[in-house]
Length: 164
Image (cartoon, rainbow, N blue to C red; front, side):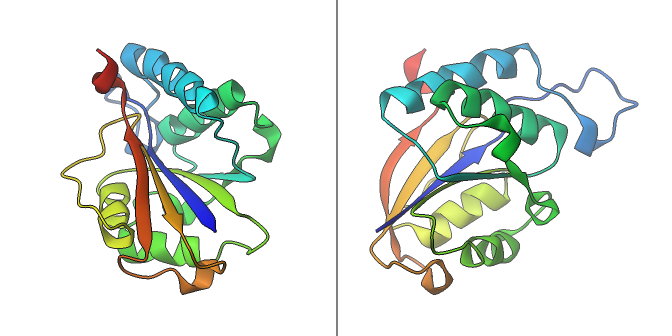
């Protein structure tokens, strides 16, 4: 059994027009939502064996905040350039390359790639994964490289606005 946690980065700031998309930081709401979601995941007992993140500022900061809340070592977060600005095919390749020693993997990325991957892999179609949204998909197969269309089952879908 494998579990994949797909997380869209928290809300980012557009205040500084001099920053590139890659450099955009979290805004005030993002800084509140990320720890909230981390606490929610901790209550659920979520404990990934590895966390992968887009290296973009907003994604990596979201990963660090949530990792801290669930007790995952920050220095063990792995950044992968392929996750930034990735489409479904790119993200699917990233997932299929996961080492099979990992049963539970968390991946922080961006829309539209995250929502596209959720809809490709799971037995459920979502209209959107909002910022700070977390989707957990479970796979019966024990090999990441065999993950395919509709091969996963949606376990849960959480996002901050559900609790407001």
